[in-house]
Length: 141
Image 1 (cartoon, rainbow, N blue to C red):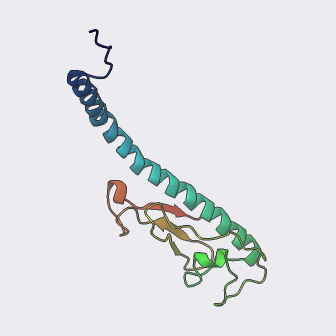
Image 2: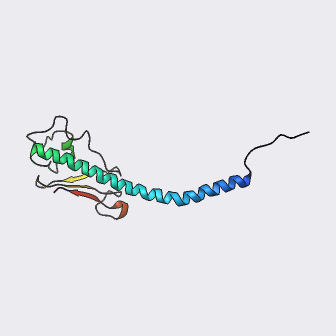
Image 3: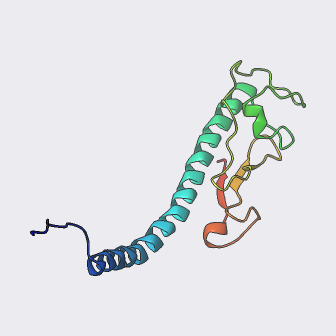
C-alpha cells in the first residue's frame, strides 16, 4: 500500500516562526509605544492651535476673549454670564469643545480679556510634569 503525501508544519518550523515573531515584537513594540506618546502631544498642540483660532474669531466679534468663568464653552454656546458679547456667531465658533488626548478638559484662563492661557495638563492631568505628563501650552500674543 502506498501512503498519501501529508502536508503541514513541523514542530521545529512552528517554533522558529514563533521565535521570529517574538523577536520582531521586542524590537518594534517599544518604538511604536514611544510614538504614541509623541503623537498625543502633537495632537494636543494641534487642538490647542485650533482652539486659539476659534478664540481669536470670538475676540474679533466680541471685542474681548471669553472670561475664565465663561470658559471655552463660550465658543459653542453664547455666554449667559457677563460680559455678554455684543456680536456672537449664531452657529458658534466650534461644534463642540474637545478634550485633550488623555481625555482631560483643556485648561483656559483669561484675566483681562486681552490675553489668554490655554493648556493641556498632559497624561497625569496635573500641572507640571515631565515626558508624557508634561503640560502643553499656548499663550495669546
